[in-house]
Image (tube, rainbow, N blue to C red; front, side, top):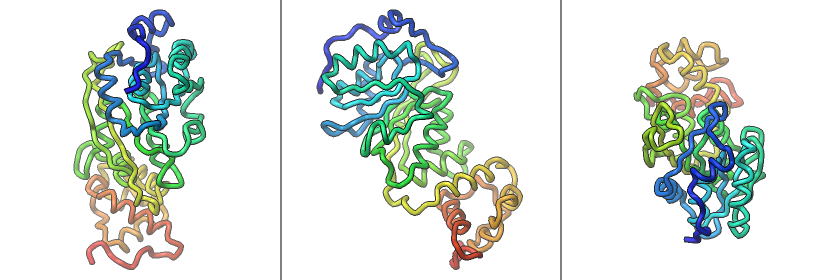
Length: 288
């Protein structure tokens, strides 16, 4: 472990910088150093690895990542946090780069480089959108080697859900097709300052290298249509998608099924059929 010089408690850093959490930025700060170190240990770091961190705030997780030996590129939108993060950067021996900017408008690949890990206590208001972007990265395997991310527990359960689960939907399909995802730990509201109204969970994702050929953009549009009317049969929810009903028939997928019963592989096959240059989709039926 490459420990930083002793630092003041995060509560003091927040007070000195006037960093009261802002609801508009989805901020809830995790201050317990033991919990932060626990999250950092979930990142599969090798010596010298780089980590891309979104929304470091006062730098709690940043400290833990640096202590674990990482080189960190941190992007922070809240200008109030830049000064304490810059001070942390000066103490890091060149292992922390701080960028003032919005992760939604910046290119993580360009900032952190190929082979970086992603680690973040994601702001609640942008977490799902960022994950969808990272899952849709092209080419695949992506520029990121792993992602260790904090979400609201409800969102975390949607990411790891399986067919038939109440939480199963678009996010679960995309995550399962492109990654191996698991919930590493769950945290109660009292672990944060200020406490959110719900529990949170850390999700660990590792890219599936075999997911290169999945037409992920088509999967995204199909699942948006299917789960937008999840209580309806596929023949109803997908009728507005050109060629979808014919592709269901070609694949032997019963159009009276509801979308939550289809496996991620079924959505991938349907997307591939719609992307096929020849009309009619694949020759092999699902029930053959």
